[in-house]
Image 1: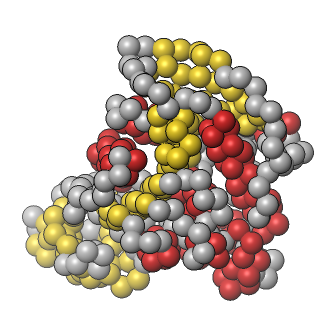
Image 2: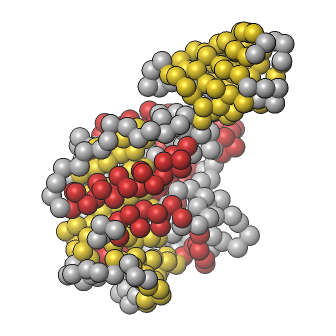
Image 3: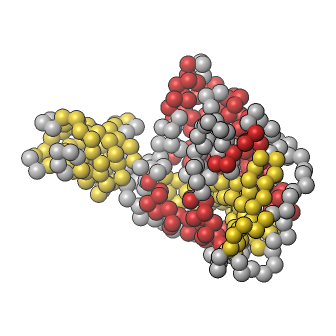
Length: 374
């Protein structure tokens, strides 16, 4: 894809400062104009450590789908700033300050229309490439030490960006993946959109062909960042783990960290993950080799329904106390249910459905548990 046309950037404005950091704001027109005026201006926020000498490294931080605030991105920014690295925050199309009136943040970003999906991803790509143009123009930033990190949707945008643009020297992909058609066909987050695509005659393979232009795998096999760090979740139903593995496989020996959670359970260890992301960029920019921890202890929390005699169907929530393998195909979960605590030990039959035994004060019963991992 061709880079966006060059523009003259407005000077940034200092908006706040404390004893550790200072923050600057600016904006520029999106290289792709849409029918929504609010979506056509790209706000940019730069957060820099107050104490710095000369040009410093900078990392672009991209948010998840449907973000309504910047708490996750500012947590990453804080970790980066503590290591002398600037953070640049930007709103992706149809999100945050770019949300068209009458819609919720991100609602227009993922549509059951391949052409609309391609248009949104092209705008994402053009916007973040223009952010890199801006970053390279600022004397405060070292243009040879620029990076990018994205979470969920932001990680998918990051995977496309780093397959097309050579400027990010390092990239971190948190809870992201590749093979967009497979993500859309298996994700628990887009059930309604997938049903509409099916009603239009789409299959996964037909959708893959339609989305080839924006598929990261079609670019990352030719261009990829020199250093990469991938954080995945073993029980993710939003970004299926197999798509995270496809991203890992196409990159050049990335650092990898798997969490024993689903897509949302990572918030329980968010600070630790963000610490590792910042450490990755710090060591990479200093010319060192980053080694991720073997694991970060995170509880595997399951929510679902249990079915067994004599208690019938009831809602249950629990924490795994044993797993037979890394994928959790067999597990034991200590659960709380309306009719009392129970332990479930089972073997997974299919996605979310497990056959096993329920152990409770009144005895042992065979049954089924259907649930999701947070």
